[in-house]
Each structure stands twice: as C-alpha cells, then as structure tokens.
Image (cartoon, rainbow, N blue to C red):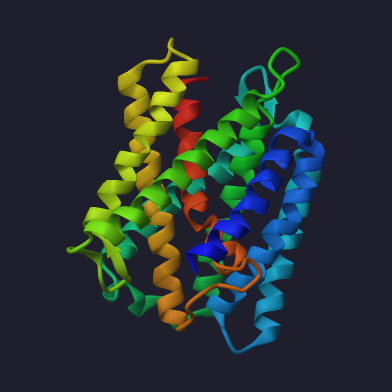
Amino acid sequence: MLKQRIITALWLIPLVFGAIFGLPTEYFSWALLGVFLIAAKEWGRIIDSQCEMTQWSFTITIGVLLIALNIMVPADEIWFKGMMHPIFLGVIAMGGLWWLISFLMVISFPKSAGFWKKSHMLKSMFGQLTLIPCFVSLLSLKALSTDASPYYGGTLVFLVMLVVWATDSGAYFAGKSFGKRKLMPNVSPAKTIEGLLGGLATTMIIVAGVMYFSPEQELGLLVAVTLFVALASAVGDLSESMFKRVANIKDSGTILPGHGGVLDRIDSLTAALPVFTLIYIAFWM
C-alpha cells in the first residue's frame, strides 16, 4: 500500500505543480472542473452507494453550479482593488460556517448522524458545502497572481497543500510509530492523538521554510495560522470518514492507486482551503 501511495504521488505531485504554476487562472478554472466532477461522482456514493441515478444527479448538479460560477465570475474579476467578488466571498463564508457545523457533527458522532443519515437531500447539501467552497477558494487564491508577482497566488495554493500533506504524512508515520490513544474511534478507528500531534509538529517544517525565504513574516501569526489550517484539514479528513462510515464504504473511489478516490485525496483540502482563504482575507488583505 505504501509503495502504491508513493508511486501515485510521484506522478501526481508534478501534475498538480504544473497546473498551479503553469496554467493561467482562466484555464485552470476549467481544468479544475473535471477534478471536482470526479469528486462529485464519488460523493454521490456517499449519498447512495447503490443508486447510479442518484450519483449522476449529484454530479450534474455540482457541474452546473461550478460552470455557472466560472461564467458569472471570470478569473480576472475575482479580485478588484483588493476586494473579492461578493459571490465568491459569500460562498467561502458559507464554507467556513459549514466546517464549524461539520466539526460539531464529527465530535458528536454517531449521535449527530441521526438527523441526516437517511436523508439524500441533506447529504447532497453537505456535499455541495464541502466541494463548492473548496473550488472557489482554490480559484480565489490562484487568481491573486499579478503581473508584478505572477506566481504569488500559485505559491499560496501550494503552501496550503504543503501544510495538508505535512499534516497527513506526519500523522501517518507518527501514528504508525507511536499511536496508542484513539482520536475519534467512532469516526475513524485508525487515527490516534499521537498521530495528530505528529502531523501538527511536521507542519513546523513548512513554517521554517517560509521564514527562511520570507523572513519579514510575523512568526507567531504564521505558526498560529499553520496550526489552525492543519487542524481544519484534520476536520476535513474526519468529516469524510464520518460520511463514508455511514455509507459503509472504505474508499470514495479507486482512480488513484494507494490513495483511493479523488475525494479521499482532497478531503483535507476541502476544509483547509476555505479556512485559509478566510484567514488570508482577515489578516493579509
């Protein structure tokens, strides 16, 4: 399994890196649509793992909404005079609220599942709140690139991804080596408190790298933001685990050998990106 994960990562990371830094935002937005359609099809299995019609219906709904966002808010209109387009800002704000609600659902699981586990409508709404703010946040950060600093937005996106990858990798290896106390056994029995702490500690490598290349940053704020985004990414991971547990599926898909589906690979990012974008707007804009 570990060998498969490494092989998949070796071709996936350059592809992601090339898209983030090589594609103009207007093309990136449409390329990203394909990725999120796959993730939407996988979320359709969470809604109803047996009914293909339900899965495709949700996929089409997400596709229509994302296409509408791409048309209504072109890449060059996402930011104007340092202000985010109100539609995008509203979507990201809803995403931030959703992740607070999702966190409460996770910590109170399985009791919290009583009101939604049999409702296709609610699970569909949760899927929209998970995927669409992530899509919008990713585009918003990417679009921060300017003529003076063409890779600025891409760098922010990549840094968030590095924080998530550091958290996931640190948690995996620390959990394997030292994990004893279960983090949330009702949601994800394999995750441990030691793993989470190891993941948070690993993110300090990213902080050190940022301070080395950009020493003018405020260290305390950078550490706080990094840890908060890392914790948000853990909530994203646990949230998907919760929904998959109720749906009785192990992986959201099989498209990425060793990693499962696209949704399994971006579950942490679905929370980390909206949370980071809101923090960025609050402290750096």
